[in-house]
Image (spheres, rainbow, N blue to C red):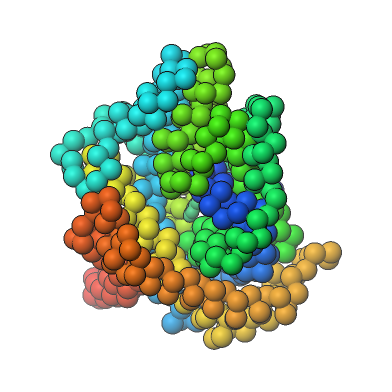
Length: 511
Ligand code: PHE
């Protein structure tokens, strides 16, 4: 793990912005409002806030701290704590790799919708045309059929997505630094504009009430708790190899305790702002029942367009609003997408001592080729399956193993001291940290994992096959779900075997 040339963040502000950029993503824009609508508005907000404070923040600080201390990406940093921990880092890294292959495609979809937003110009009031736009452009079948058709607009946008991801990280922290301030500022501007429009619509008050006032009866539904904890992890980009890698570019004087809080609360504030936008515009256009109905993806691409064409009688305004909405999603998606690549490329280049730039290019090309799977007619269904396993199984299980390993087989005092080292005012109390890492995180994630498995096998709609109601079959679940999950979990052992082979070869050649 050569460290001499490791690049570092130019300032602590850049690090904070980059970490916020990773955390704030499409999950804030549509997943959060969608879950809040499903689970009694303010009730979900409260549980989310509690889960963020109790487990999200300690874990975020923990990852940044071990990255900084070990000066390595996830596998190397975990190996630094204990040799046996390295495979956990690879499992997280591999999961990040799988995620980026489809996150790039979702990014491509939002680029495409931004490009075609002019179509909203003459769709005023035409709900069918608006909700069908996405399907027309992507040529998706919503089932695992139609792999022989490819959507050219999506393909071109995917190319643009990968090119822009590569452009932002071509020189690691140096190039991220140049672009990140715009990527953080623009979504706020766009969301602010949309919130103003939303709040001034008739019915907006009902939307705000539904979003903020807790329906306490929703608290008795275990699904609310499960979804809130899952969303905290997803949204804060922890257990994804990212925060460890970003921490590894920090210098020793950085204040992790303070930065952790800033990152977490900025992430939360974007979620809340997005919630205000979604709830007010959906209530304002009388489409509130659709908010909770479908998944986040459907909300953004199928349901929301119908709200857009009902915003006003002016086609021009609606089209501009559509552009701002999808452009905003682009700025949210790009820094999350490149943070995934950064996490992976840091891990790989640390381990194999390959030049960072070459690793990044190779990664973008390989992941880019794999992402072509999702561009076909059956792509959306495959994406749905892969996403389900990545977030409901791999991410959660890796979270359990990581927190148990660090909480129980490493001295947490060392980590807390390191987190608080440069902070005078804000400190992470050791009792809080210990309770989170040793007890609450492993137990809640463990419950989540078991719950997800039980749900998959006992749910009337699935009966063991995810998406059965939509025509997904067992084979698709095995290939895109279980096999990928298994591969991620054992990836550390495979990579170490390869590493040993290469090292042995090198030694032989040297002799
Ligand atoms: N945190 C991002 C969001 O809320 C998603 C993400 C997950 C980004 C994993 C990177 C890694 O959308």
